Image (cartoon, rainbow, N blue to C red):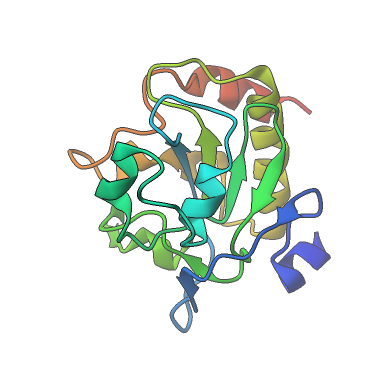
Amino acid sequence: MAALRETGRLPEARWCPSPNFGPRPDGAGISLLVVHNISLPPGEFGGGEIEQFFCNRLDPTAHPYFRTIAGLKVSAHALIDRDGEVTQFVSLLDRAWHAGRSCFEGEPECNDFSIGIELEGTDEVPYTEAQYVTLVRLTRQIMQAWPAVTPERVTGHCDIAPGRKTDPGPAFDWEYFQSLLAET
């Protein structure tokens, strides 16, 4: 995992660089993993719209919902699609724009010290086995490269921005994910 710490690039990910990132503040270590969900258009899977959105190339005329998000500049470090394939948008060494105003255990601005992974999905639709398997694999790689990220420091967007965000939602089976993560 030394290569991951040096490059910030997930070995299995397809690289699709987003312009929406910045440097982490001086002295900010990576100590949190935030799980999100996204689907574009909402509730639809399998198109290239998430990638377009994170890369500021989403056509606002392609769907009525896209007009409501057209001006947003957001990203995540990586996306796990419904088949378990990974696309990486931002080096793990950099600050992706995934959490917004947030706080974890009294520490504000979670983007500064976290890695954000999006699952293609919604709060209500069960995630696929392939997504869980891939998320566990990535989580283990991240925990090995940055030991401050422990199972207790893997959380949902809903937990760091309560009242503002609901993802990954009730469809995400935290107990199942944690049991897979605990397997050797």
